[in-house]
Image 1 (tube, rainbow, N blue to C red):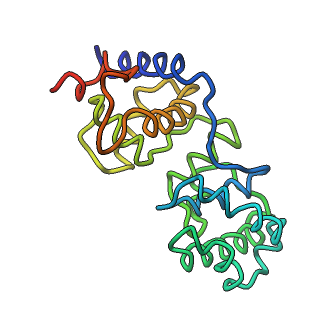
Image 2 (image 1 turned 60 degrees about the horizontal axis):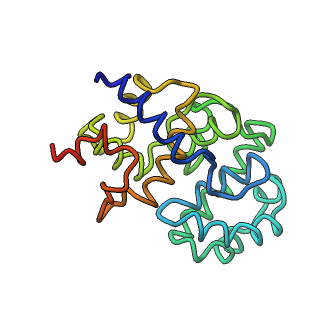
Image 3 (image 1 turned 120 degrees about the horizontal axis):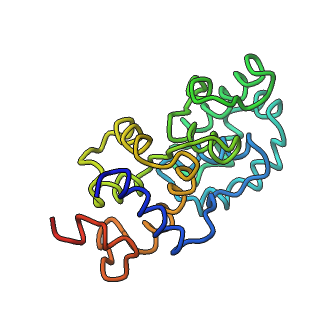
Length: 210
C-alpha cells in the first residue's frame, strides 16, 4: 500500500468511526477562532472554551482588542498558561488586522503567519474551518498518529505538513485532522494507545509492531 492509498484508507476508516468532524474550540466568527487557537497553545481546548466567553464579551470585536490594555487581557486569560505572551500577541495581532487587513482575518497562510503569534498550525485551521480551503493542521495528535501509522519518522511540523499534503485528498484533509484529534483523545493516546480498540489498526505500523 503506497502513501496515497494508505491515506485514503485512513480517511475512510476515520470517517466511519467519527462521522462528525468538528473543531472542539467554540467560536462564532473568524476572529474568535483565531484568538481561541492562539490561546490553545499548550492548553486544553476545554480550558480555552471556559475562558473565551468572558473574553469575547469584554472585547466584542477586533477594534476592541486592538485598543485593549494588555494587562486586562492577561487577567481574563490567565488560566490558559503563557498568558503574558498570549495577551501581548492577541492585542498586537488585532492591531495589525486593523492597520493592514481592514479589520478582517486574511484568507491565506502567508498573510496569517505574518500576524504576531500565528504559526502554520493556526493558519491551516483558519484556512480549513473558516475559508473551506485544503488544510493540514499538524498538532501533537497529528504528529503522533501519522507517525505511528508510518507516514513519517519526523517531529518537524513543516515537514509532516508537506508529506501529508502530498498524500491526502485535499478536500478531505481538514476533516481528517479534526478526526485525528478526536481519535488521539479517545484511543491513540500518547502514553498508552489502545490498539485493540483502534479503527486504524489494520493499516498501522505501530499496531503491527514494526
